Image (cartoon, rainbow, N blue to C red):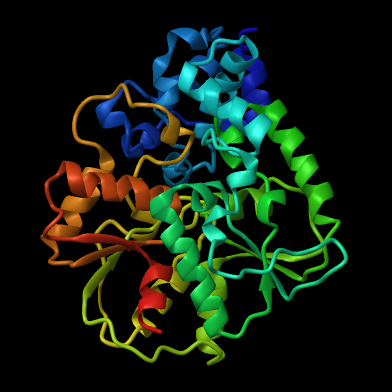
Length: 375
């Protein structure tokens, strides 16, 4: 079923678009692909019938929201891309890698093709409490799929446990009962699967007693706060909680980290949810650490290309990947560590360190790993 331009404009409030082109000019992937948000909106305004299967560029979008950030009329151009993706999904025209991620999310509760029973393997030797339905905790730590299954990101997860214990937080996890937040399914345009998992998760959360949920991933945080119904507990990204604990002197560092560190703003933490200061506050609180600010930071931060389902498909664009540009920028500043606060960013940036041949010049670390090292 093709998407009618006028209907799309009405649903997404695109009539405010003045065709200034700032969305396409600011789109970080437009320079290396055929993605052109302004053109997509223009065609919708002209009531052109879209044929999404003939538009491979719609899968280049990372949903980083730079286009919305740049728009003077507060239009959200990337929502056009999501609507076109939904049309492709409804027509059953899905790339094999994306189909596999969606099927795995439906069957196993994660997009990585791993069994549900393996979700808590990262906990081996950690003695982390799994919350029972008749029990309570001061904090529910929502680990997320990537932090549960990916061997590299599991280091981040274990560091989080160390930091929470160091702050004397009474926390617990859901273990194998935890299920994907489905953020990426929504960003891929699989609305039906997203809604099913969202409703299932809301029902699951109601079985437990906790006043505060903390997420590893900005993507989990974003979807719980913006796409789920209002829930009877507060949801925070871990950088928000850790910054709060530092201010309250409940979290203290006893060691030093004598390194030059810069910070990459994850799109779903920064541009999407305006969380800019807390990660920087944490880094500046670590003894011995010299903080360096990147030129393209905060609202102007350059996307790593990990969002919008891009973790499960290869880019058809040409030229240098954005994560490689990001790594080169950090190296040129003299940074020894490129820090971030997102599992997707961690993986894309680490891969870029290798592909640019900078393994001996810079490390990519998550903020919580640096915190654990300084405790």
